[in-house]
Amino acid sequence: MHKENGMATSDSEILSEAIRLAGEGISITFPVNGRSMLPFIVGGKESVILEKPRTPQVGDVVLAYVENCRYVIHRIIRIEGETITLMGDGNLYGVEHCRLQDIKATATHVVGANGKKRSLDSRQSRRRAALWLKLRPVRKWLLLVYRIIRKVKSL
Image 1 (cartoon, rainbow, N blue to C red):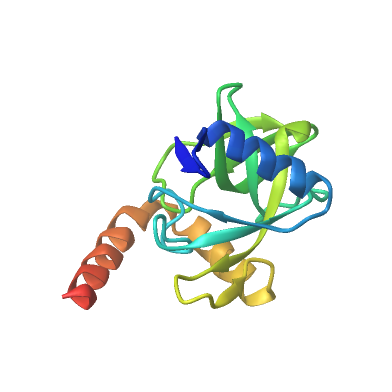
Image 2: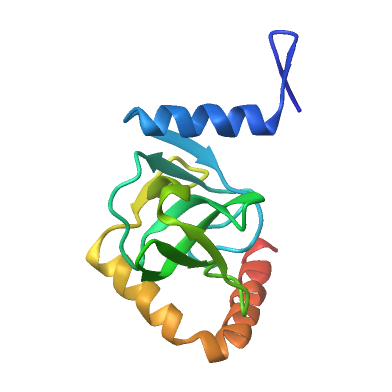
């Protein structure tokens, strides 16, 4: 629950409004929580810019309603007809599934705590993400090294 002007607003109301605005073509800067998109998006410190959903492609980061129960901001790793398979960059094994119409927005940029934007659509960003997907068998160790480096930098 969030309070603004003495009125309480639930997270689901905020999410619904963000989805509505993105669907109308208005770009929304939306905070991200959790570690499921490491190392490309740092939850609790960075946000994503959500835009109207476009024709999905493998490699896109999207806001989707998955498994008929929750919303996630994850990367598309497979498209088979109307079925979309998603996986968080920081996840080791789990995937989610949704239908094409369950994609509510496309994340186009990451916004750092300093306000600096980086594209999720650039050729370089897509190459990094494709390489990261291929490194799934050793992702556990790479994420461990990443977390250690971040911890040391914060000291």
